[in-house]
Image 1: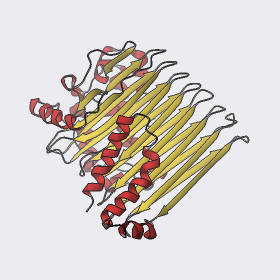
Image 2: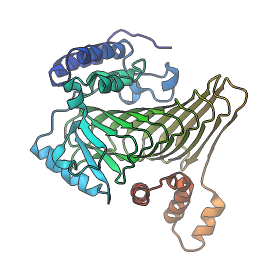
Image 3: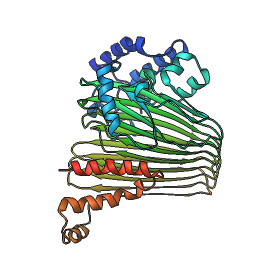
Image 4: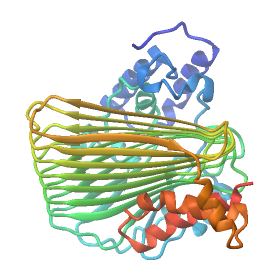
Length: 441
């Protein structure tokens, strides 16, 4: 149940911030009206809290406390710091699309020589140009969710990608979100990918911090439509500053006989939440979602997935792994709904958590809602510690305790990482996992 509370000082400050930021936000007319309506929807609830069921384990009023003011547009110094950070994330044979402090940076992006049938634009450009069809798709996210509503109200820029029918893009597209601010600020971005029929592409998203960027908030959302007989491979890596907050949302819609393969890893940010809705709109489609949380200290990471089987003959697989050390807290909420006409659905979900200390916590909440009678569905969840006998075996062969633990952790998360089809991107995810392992005390 959503509870409207009296506006406090934080609420008034955010209202003032929205009023001040309006001149910087792209779009007029219906776009501006949609922003105002979305902000009102957010303002009625404010930051979500534990009395809202979907946010039971991630109380942003306690974890995040306030929404920071909008980040200023990046200056030359910020772009220089961002360039240095992007260089460290360079992946061979990918096309970079860079957002710096929530603003698209063409000088750091690779826009020349796009493959035939591929168009790349910016959210700001679409909202200011009056492209009604694209604007309508950008505003399809449900503003009943307060953080989506806030993102709708404040979104400043993003990447808009359109891939024509029959085009299979050979070069992965890499959206890199870079925070450079040395003072506490917030970034609001939204991107769109429209994949035509009989098409294919690989999309990568990275969230990183430039040198000196520590306390910031990244509020991002992504809208994806996958055409009939098309395939999208998606890799998402969150390596934000350890003092940052990352709240991201995604809405993915699949046509008939489409294939969506996605992998996500969170090893950065003090507080993060990824909430995704995946909807089957055409028969014969398949979704594979794989995720990993690598957490220590007091990190809190929440992955919330909603799989909506609305048509027959579709399949989905969810594999999620969490490793939590120290006083970290991992949350996985997976909900699968099979609607009355979605016969022959095949949906399975499995989540496993590995706790490395007595104070670490993992909350797994798998849910099935089945309204059809000819389906194959199931879910499972396990939580445990490292196998002491395996640790002893490895240490008896000369490995230190930390090295032995690292090997077992790599094996534990390996099943999810192996779902990445592209070799270079798989190595990128493995490198991120190694950085986390090396940073462990």
